Amino acid sequence: MTKPKLLITGGSGYVGSFTVRRLQDKYEILVVDNLIYGHRQAIPDVPLTELDLSNYNQLETVIKDFKPQAVIHFAAYIQAGESVANPAKYFLNNVGGSLNLLNAMVSAGVKNIVFSSSAAVYGISQVNPIPEKNPTQPINPYGESKLMVEKILKWYSQAYGLNYIALRYFNACGAELDGSFGEDHRPETHIIPLLIKSVLEDKPFTIFGNDYRTADGTCIRDYISVLDLASVHQRALEALFEGQKNKIYNCGTGQGYSNLEIVKSLEKVIKKPVKYVFGPRRPGDPDVLIAGVDKIAKELNWKAAHSDIESVLSSAWKWHSTHPQGYSD
Ligand SMILES: NC(=O)c1ccc[n+]([C@@H]2O[C@H](COP(=O)([O-])OP(=O)(O)OC[C@H]3O[C@@H](n4cnc5c(N)ncnc54)[C@H](O)[C@@H]3O)[C@@H](O)[C@H]2O)c1
Image (cartoon, rainbow, N blue to C red; front, side, top):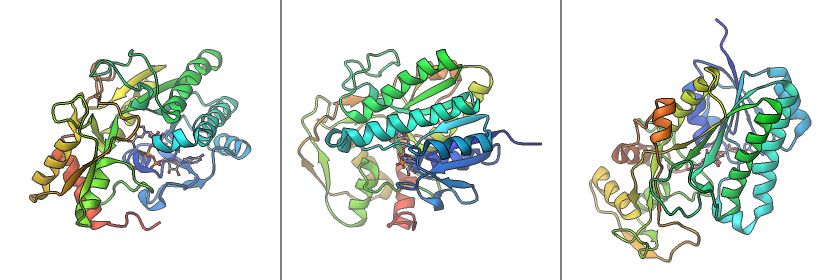
């Protein structure tokens, strides 16, 4: 039986590679990635075309030749802080690259797309958990770039019959349970890898700010395992093929952990104390960000199953302690 074809942009990055490995048995996959931040080693045995989304002509040729039934679009720059200093970089790549992709899909007659959006579209929310219908007021160009693509998708669906599901991830985290694959962002800006790295190097970990409006004063976030993100992409694709379309869903657990709780949970997992200090706040960090998860549970019949914080930390610990330099490519 021939497998349906998927073109996956950014498929050698963190979330993309977990999704590619999960889907590779069911689908014929072609990854498109410029490898600026991705790692070939993260997706052994999957064909990869090294290509930047800014190259419209080549992208259109690749899509027309491969003829995928659907596209999953992970490729983007992801550092919110950098986007404030260099918005041009983010709008060019995240919006410009997405426009090239969508135009090439329209030109090739490819109708279905799952798009990696972000909780960053909400900015500082007045309510938590945050429902999808919450106002979207990004506080950095990264979040704005994701919101702009969501809006472009809406107009492209009306004009060109494109079917989309946009997934607003909260904090992606964790590794394969056996530690064989994991997170390798360079530079790393996420709390769990930074915390584990500081323990492995026997340095104190800096928590950014302890005067937030939360019980222990540190920021609260919703941590979703990369294994769950891989499964939600599978579910979203199935939903598109079943005829659901033009939807936006939060991807989280509906539960938040403070930075301090993450440190304390890691202590439990590794059974030793972790040294930490409090540093100044990072600009633009909301006090609390927790996903409202009712809509995705009801409409996609999906909920997180691998995001228990201790199993996330245990898998991340296994990955980082066995791969202190990350992937070797
Ligand atoms: N990691 C998170 O916590 C998180 C949270 C919310 C949303 N997201 C979104 O999920 C997606 C994946 O995030 P990630 O953490 O896996 O990031 P990542 O940096 O690990 O992966 C992104 C991949 O896209 C590739 N890429 C970037 N620009 C490209 C271009 N112009 N052409 C071709 N390839 C390009 C990179 O080389 C990399 O492999 C992103 O769109 C991100 O905005 C991530």
